[in-house]
Image 1 (cartoon, rainbow, N blue to C red):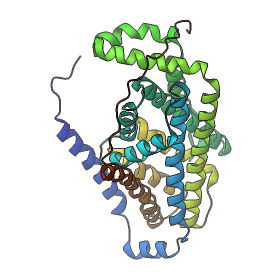
Image 2 (cartoon, one colour):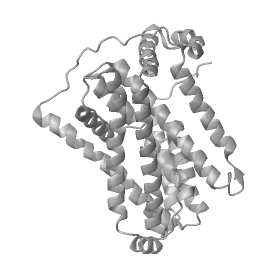
Image 3 (tube, one colour):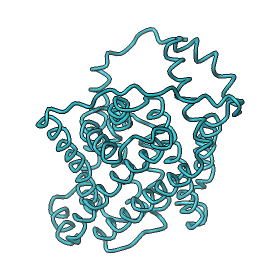
Image 4 (tube, one colour):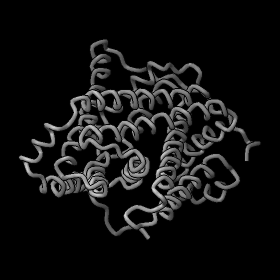
Length: 336
C-alpha cells in the first residue's frame, strides 16, 4: 500500500544531516578537552601519513577494480579515464546525501564514454563482491574471537548478512531465479525503466563468460579489504598503543556493511562513528582516544576533495567527455 504522503527531498536531506549531527554530538559531548589534548599528544605522528596512504591507495584500487570489469566488455575504456571519473565522483560524493553517491556520479561520468549498461552492470558486480568480501573477513574475525563478542553470539547476524548477499549474487547471475521477478518489476517501475534494467541484467549475465576478470576483481577487492582492516588496526594502535587485529577483522566489516545497507545519513556520517564508539567501548579504550581516532579518520573525507583537481583540469582545458554510443550488449540467451 503506498504512503499517503511523500516527504519533500529537502526535508529528507535536512533530516539525514540532523541525525548525523545528533549522533556526532552524542559522541563528542562525553569528551574532556584536557584528556583529548593528552590523547593527541600520545598519538603516533605516523598515523596521519598512514591515513593519507590508505585513502589514496584504496581509491585507486577501487577505480582499477571497476576498470577490470568494464574493460572485459568494453576494451576501449582507458584506466586513466576511469581513475579520473572515480576521483571526480569521490569529490562530488562528499556533498551528496547518499552512501552510494560515488557509484552514481562515477557511473554517470563513465556512461558518457562507453556503454551505460556495461558500466552499471560492472558497478553492481563490484558492490556485491565488496559485500561478499566483507562477510568472509567478518566470519574469519568471528571465528578468531571464538564466535561471540561480549557474550553475544554473532553468527546469526553474520549468517543473515551472508544469506542476503548470496541471494543477490544468485539473482544477478541466474536467469532462472530472476525470471519470476521480471513481470512484477516491469509493472512496478514501468516499461522504460524495466527495459534499461533488462539491458543491465544482460551485461551482468555476460560476466559469466569472463571468469578471469571476475577472479582478478575478487583479488583486488580482497586487497582493498585487507588494507582497510589492517590499516585501521594500526591506526588504533597509533592512538592507543595496543594492536587489536582480530577485533578489527570482525568489527570493520560490520561497520562498513552497516553504513552501506542502512543509508540513514550522508555517507554513513554519524552512524560509522557511533559504531566505532561501540568498538572502542568493547576494547576498553577512552572516549578521548575515540575522538582522536575519529578526527584522524575524518582526514579521509577531506582527501576525497582532492578529486576537485580532476574537475578543475577539465574546466581549464575546456574539455567535456563526449558521448560515444556503445554497442548493444550481447544477449547470452543460452545462459540460465
